[in-house]
Image (tube, rainbow, N blue to C red; front, side):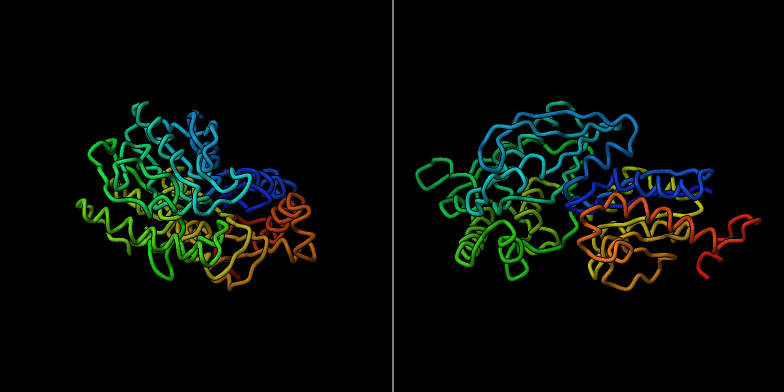
Length: 381
């Protein structure tokens, strides 16, 4: 049998690449003769570069010297793909895990813009921007500044970086922005939030970045002012566009530059050739840390399940916790249930991922006739 293993990361414990290897190792303990094809996935969050690097032959790691979200100099990785695409990750240049202490009003995305600029200087023809794990709520203004945009105060001085600095914004000049490469720029995200309002960047994601109620109000007003000043400069990007609020409004900033926004799982699946790998597969396995009501709304399990369904290939789900109906999956395994508790699963996730692969292979062996070729309809019985 050919089995494709395409999980997302199990956030906070195991990356997608390692999760795929562990599930495959468990499967091999039961069915060593099977062909296991590893296609670790991502939805545009942290770990997207690692998933692409693992799944795309010829991808090469590059680095850029940048200012991180708190202004400290650092090296940020990016990925050059064989087709001339640059894949960059906000988390690696302007991410919340790079902060020693959260600074919701002053953290910024300047470093992300520096990485993109470095990739453009290398002659890339397309840029993929993974938008997860932002530290800031600056509407992508820091990124745009690094790409050549000018944001100035009433006396003509550059505004300070970060969401708070937008309050002093009076004029903007985008004439110097770097040109969008020939094949475009795509922002990858797993959220569809607008920039402003109760479902926007400040209200929903500000608290995750350390903002209290007063700071959320400051950031909301700053972003609203930012939109107004850009509008006066002729920018016609709608702040209520789906995904504009992603990564503290960096989705909006990307659209101001001329980028499009797409659900990350779909773009990653296309980039790694998942559909081609599944076409002649007999079984597919996907997974993530928690399978819940959001999982079938554009996240990795839904994308993998959709691709497998179109190819008429049964799919299994492995998740740390399962708190929603798993309709559509032939089999489903919860690491929490296998380990006996959430604490036990988190304390040794590698053990339980291997166990899940082994259990799936064992269940499959029962579902098909031992002496007969695999019958996909039997797997669902």
